[in-house]
Image 1 (cartoon, one colour):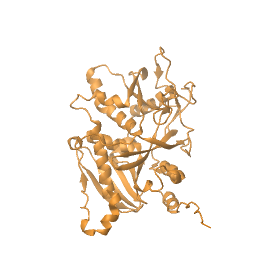
Image 2 (cartoon, rainbow, N blue to C red):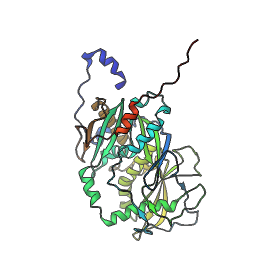
Image 3 (cartoon, rainbow, N blue to C red):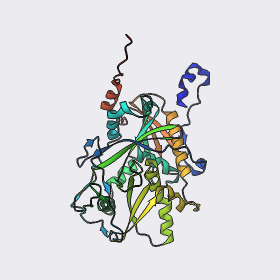
Image 4 (cartoon, rainbow, N blue to C red):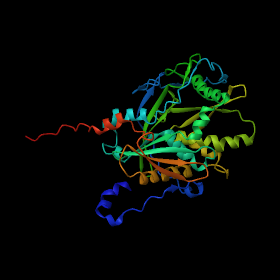
Length: 388
């Protein structure tokens, strides 16, 4: 453990062995018992507005407002496309910037004390989701950049060349499907508690409400942020994140084979995303080929695994979490030098192990100068009580 660093310094003979240059990802290697995962607690939040500007408040939070009982959904998810659609500019690579801004503003009051951050891992929830699903992923690889600064390990995703090529060649149908997911949120959310949804407005994907949470996986303290679709004013507990609801759309299913495939692939991603954040329910709208949502179904996060428990080609939450914990240990042991301009790039392609390469300065550096400089200005120490 990194906490024992002082002892190692005193006894150079006990130098730890050099970390392995790669990490295997086969599910069978990670099938032990479920590791410890601290119930995520919300430290704060922030909002991004229609121009993608940061606000340190909850102004972008929306309120879950499903159709009343007996009134079936009949949502036209294509309505307003493309004329009332303002998609975010994906060429702008934001990295961890919004989360770092929140951290800078709140670093003095973090629960866990002033030393807690130095032992923590800071990242986006989406990056952890990719780690959780890696043992079962067959299609898409990933790259994660890592830098250590003032003890803290920061992880930020890098777009792979394949992902970039895919994004730039995204077919019109896929672009419309992305719109439909956001449109569904518009039909299901109101701007104030008890209000009614207004689907007549623009769908602007710059707007986001993000929760910032603290957790721990095994021995790794985590501080991460994730986008939240809405909060349920009628939730049994008003305490975030247990009041949050995740909204999803999916194709209508007609055969047991289609359901089986849905449970094996899509539900794994839904589980990983919501479990990490502590969101208790995912509400799915099932759309027909014409793009209308004809039915809604609630999937409690803690019951998703039941759908694949007896499927030998299914996924296992323990494997996901054990692999994630192993990757975090691998990263902690690999990135030992404390230097915000030094980047270890962890790369993974399906069928292979996670490998590492080392880079210095641009274009790989992802911790912005404004953050590094502000964090280097020491926090003012509290006034000392003078004894007369």
